[in-house]
Amino acid sequence: MNYKLVFSVSQSLLLARWKQTLVAAIGVTFSITMFITLLSFMSGLNDLLDGLILNRTPHIRLYNEILPSKKQPIEKDEHYKKQYNFISSVKPKSERLEIYNNASIIKTLKKDARVLGVAPRITAQVFYNVGSIDLTGVINGVDVEAENRLFSFKDYVTNGNFIDLKNIPNSIILGKGAAQKMLANIGDVIQVTTVKGERMQLKVVGFFQSGLQDIDNIQSYSSINTTQKLLGESNSYVTDIQIKLKDILLAPQLSKEYANIFDVEAIDIQTANSQFETGSSVRSLISYAVGITLLIVAGFGIYNILNMMIYEKMDSIAILKATGFSGKDVNWIFITIALSIGIFGGILGLLFGFGVSSLIDQIPFNTAALPTIKTYPINYNPKFYMIGGIFSIVTTYFAGYFPSRKASKIDPVIIIRGK
Image (cartoon, rainbow, N blue to C red; front, side, top):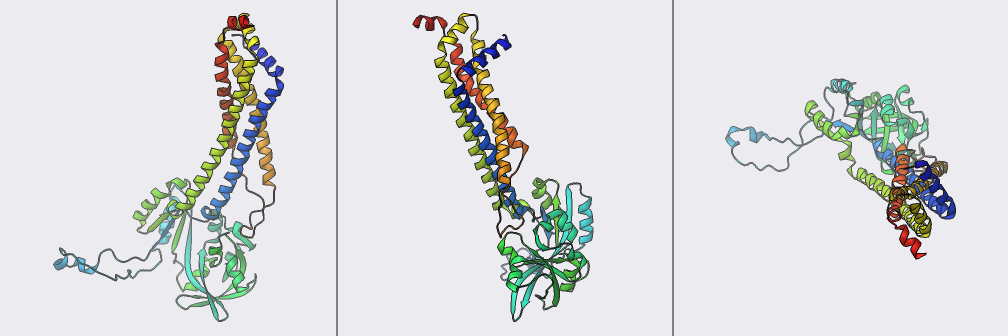
């Protein structure tokens, strides 16, 4: 087969009906453009929503949970061991929330090759004292630098400098909602009371806003040392150990492993945010479904155009076959036409898709709930462009393959006799 001659004939047929060719190419271009734009925008939106939860949530959280004893004293008595014992109103075990030997646990975790980082935390239930009114709140005592490195803490501090928690003793970063309720400004001193009645004055050095109003109304941050002092605990007191993994998919398996090794409660991010993760998966599935539908519709458009082109070019096909072109040659002529449309339209679609995505990325998006977001989110994942390019070629190939089979089987004698 003379590929140069086949390409030359394909080019002649394309240019002979250039308007139809242009319409087919525009169809592919529009489909790829919308496919790239839709997936980039929806994926960017998913990343934004995921970030509100996942960026602030450890992959594994180790903690002590106050639970009733599984084995009651009566069950240890030999006299009642073989009897059924019905016990009601069982009280929780007399245990502390502190994770014992937490320094050794953290040291062991940091040596684990599967662990990206570890950040200790203290969760303290408090009351914000506003005159004669007490507002319920939670102060998270954190290792400021580790919290920022693993959970992008500074991105959610809307006013003030996050590092002031470490540098300024007895300081606090208030949740935006809590600050508004107390009418507190940076530099003000507020008073908090623990559930045990301990009181302490803290200096406001910043405001924190996660985008989740229920959290911002009660949650604030302080350094671990300040929180330990507030609770009247020693420097070794830690209630939570937050773990970030190199592979988030290992979280369910490792949470069980760490719970057994360290004899603490452990919860993984998939379990803690199962509903949120399901919603993200559904949104991604819808995006891919709509995008692929656009490409398939474009493929049918090309199929119809090539089918009409073959019908109109019956005389040309008969002449080609009469002059020595085989059915395979004719088949490749029309496949070449289809692939030319697919490649040309696909390249333009990828370029236009990138351009439209970049344009959306510059549109201002200002909302009080998400102060760190300034423009609409776009994800420039190369995977989307690879899928779009491959799918445009595959779709147009099959759109040209079936009409070309019909053309290759045409008997030139019947066509010429009919004329």
